[in-house]
Image (cartoon, rainbow, N blue to C red; front, side, top):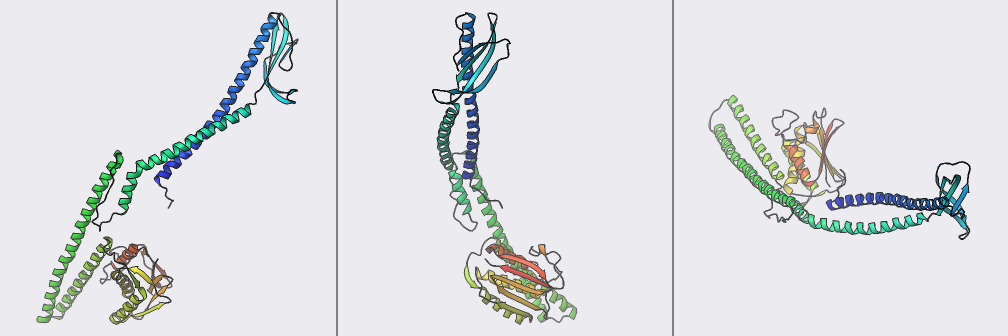
Amino acid sequence: MANKIKLIKKMSKIFLVTGLVLAILSVVLLYFYTKNLLQDEVEEELFSTEARIVSALENGEIEYSLQPVTEVKRVSVLKSLILKDTIIYDPSQDEMELFRELSTFKNINKINYKITVRTLVVESENILIAVVVAYLVVFSLAFLFLYYLNTSRNLKLWNPFFQNLEQMKSFSLLSNKPLNLVESDILEFSELKNEIVTLTEKVKADYETLKQFTENVSHEIQTPLAVIQAKIDNIINGSSISEVQFKQITSIQKDIQRLKSLNKRITLLSKIDNNQFVKLEQINLNSFISNSVENFKELHNSNISFDFNNDLIVSMDSYLVEILCNNLISNAIKYSTNKDCILIKIKNQTLTISNFGEEPLHNPEKLFLRFYKETNNKQSTGLGLAIVKKICDLYGYKLTYYYKEHKHFFSVKFK
């Protein structure tokens, strides 16, 4: 998953990048625009001087050369205008200076002249650097001011949103504490706040309705099942029935027990979904498993081995710890024979339970889905492993299954 970034930082980052791109482009444009502007001014001065010399020659007033500024020569052939840069030694500065040179060829009073006019180019690089630096300083100060002003302003504008977001994070269906949402003068935030209030009220109402329905159904189912069980017991104890009838009634009793178990497990799943197990205790998992192993050995005469190299302490609801251990162990017993060894191991904060299996599961990806059964075993409700998965998800534990060397392995990694 990609790293998330806060809204204000994201907006400020966009503002910062956009500002820097605009600053760089504007500096480049300013540099070349100023450079061309200075060069145009120099050339304009050259053409003006050249025009004055031509006018003087036409009127016969002067005919002179003043190196290196002006140079008038008589030539035999007229050529095209030449405009270029040239470097000339300046004795006053004792250095080579850059001049802009304009050479024109004119026929004045039937005499061909080459008129060369030069002007010292102002050291434009220094001017350009000074202009760019000044621009960058002014722009940076303005940019920083706008950046912090924009950030503080956005924080103020988005403050109702952030406060309401924190309220939503603390929202719980099990809490009667109302949401203290902040009103905003921004239309979208105000609409969002109203929608949150409407949604949370509806969710709470639906939750209470579903919770009440589940509890009512569970309670109502238990009563008729108990009545049916009692009547069947009376039939068995008080009447002479045939062997066929006895088998049928025994089958009915098993179905009733299965319905009771199914009802109990569905109710448990519902309670886990509704986060009704909030009591946390520091529990020694080794003790729970040791007791469970002894109980299962007495009931099923199973070959169960428990191995551990350290005590595993978990922070869970004690009832859910019992359900987790019993469901994993009973699942291993259900699909093993008495002669097969079931190995329970605790190592490196991980509980692993393995049992013998002829072949791997056909659909291991569906193993933890509700009511999924790999076999047609009528004793199974298809909810045992789903409950284990739900408990692990509740506490953030990692539940995995794999098949290796003719054994099924279920492991729970405790954080």
